Length: 106
Image 1 (cartoon, rainbow, N blue to C red):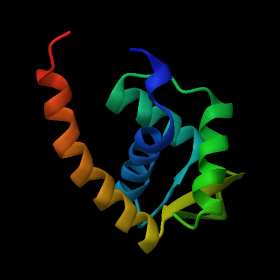
Image 2: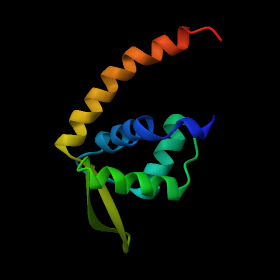
Image 3: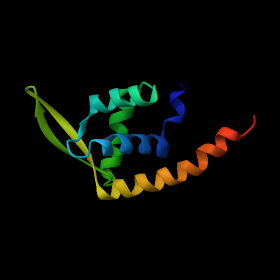
């Protein structure tokens, strides 16, 4: 799968959705990388992921907190209410756009 299309709002919606699925416990970066690979079949580079996570956090769409697991410190990411609102908006828009793209003839 071409990773080039996984940027901007599309990547944001993917990350917000994955983080939202585990909003109670949060997810750390490596778990997010693995979840993106498993659910969408793409390999994101760590630099791409962490850059986007910083952008989402700066915009108030996710929040992070340091936690410890198996003696290691991990930054756990959780979605905020603002992030949930944007995710709902993205999903509504994607439901309209995706069927149109799929039926387009090239």
